[in-house]
Length: 249
Ligand code: SAH
Picture 1 (cartoon, protein in one colour):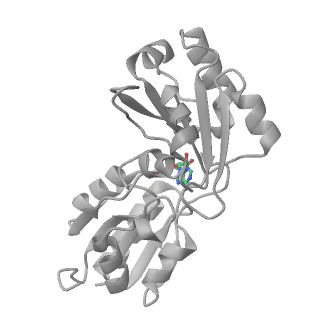
Picture 2 (picture 1 turned 180 degrees about the horizontal axis):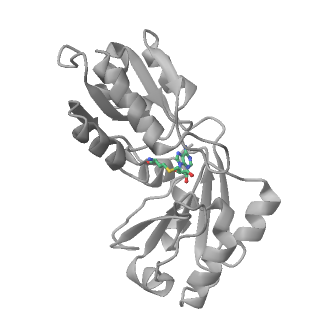
């Protein structure tokens, strides 16, 4: 791609894993890149498009030792200043719980030119692979996207769980596997029915995708019993019931 100039950083969304969900811009950027700095969620199939580039894994992974954000920012700036075409490749969409904003601000501060290429987020496209529409006219007219843990790794403080339960017909949780018991308990205490349908979609869009259908009350125990774990996206709401008719994969 001719407009990917040397010394620029392109922040690219890789989607949830199935390489067919890459945008045309993403593929062109991967082909033109000198270096691809990717996070742990990016699939092998996606990285294959960057066959001419140096691949560097630098990203956060819940529970495992991972580089500090300033270190990642500094690396992006250094590679750009060295005159490379740098792709910063993130799972899903870079601005959905992906620290994309922090990285862009670091590039701005260092006077590095950049471009943002959005991607398909797990909380919409990943759920679609499990036959779950994130909205549907007869079921819900609003969605909330929430992270299941904050920067400290604990379940996020300062969330008004009762307000969350009332505000949206569908709640989509990222990074929630470790705190599902606590989160479900708070949502039920806040007024959501204990039998609200919950779907847990692990490795959404990939061949090894697994889906658990459960309820708010049973979710934590069934997650544990089923062995389903990260990366998984959790949807809470009546829309999950459409899965029965809408599963296509
Ligand atoms: N920027 C990403 C989200 C990063 S946070 C996006 O837009 O999708 C990491 C969390 O995303 C994971 O803990 C999980 O909740 C979710 N996730 C990402 N890829 C996933 C996949 N293929 N299947 C299920 N969940 C996924």
